[in-house]
Length: 387
Image (cartoon, rainbow, N blue to C red; front, side):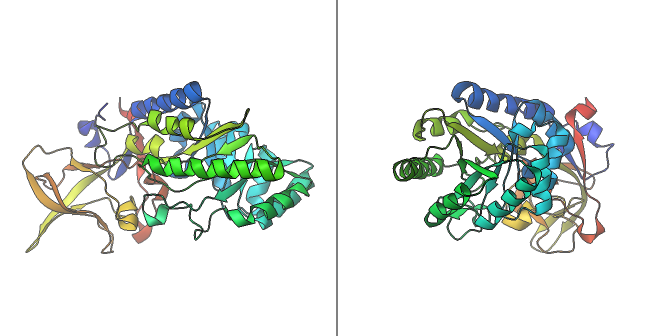
């Protein structure tokens, strides 16, 4: 399924803006729901940090998928979009009292907890309300995923999670508190992972830990949350517009050893929304230097920061030109040398005013946009707005 860009309509819209292919988003969600829920009985929560555009959230909520939140603002956004509180999980190392209170008052399903002080704070706030908060311990499996260092989260050196050697102390703490109830274990090893071996390794660690808890403490927890992390193909957004969810979920079904009655939860973000979104921009100038030529576009690193932050690759297409390729650096107007979308890229010969699409930008694009240089935040257009 190839995304169709209504170039004639784009010509009348001020750039830069994010464009979302609603048909692709719905097809992706349908694929996930069929593979996860119908084939394996898995529970899926959407990681809101990937894209919290309100209209995108409403489409996701309507599919029946839950929400994975990492701030009180995301909990509020999930509730506003129509996600049931019983399908909301709240993770993060630094939950404030205000965020915890909001979540308790809403009656969310579970807090994924990451330290003893946090657990004690949740217990205190729950006691004030006369409720019992369900919690899952985020365990650090100390697995190095095959991804960028800045989006690896499962190593002992990372700020996330509770290390193996601390687990007994944390469980002991929860067991003596009256207003928190331990219902599960939570894991997350990183993002943009395309190698199934990483997920197989995680299954192995979970299996070891479950066996240890069962043998040493007689404990079987009802919920296992394996996090997310499934990546996408940034190099071929039309050929691989929907990730291989069948392989992903079957990997866990095959390698994760569960006790009777246990439920498995996933927290997917990028894989659900990345390919449906593109940053649409115009060529402002074509600048020819002594050894390079540049396409200077009206989108900048403030609109899509991933290339500057991670040296991330995004396919860039000239929607207006069908001429022979030339070699360009595509750069933005922001007053920083890092405001570069690509270097030495073959792109059809480009002229001032051409409309360009920076693909696979539906995740961590609009969500991470900021107002540096007093630049306005990009607007968003859904395909249904134009059709």
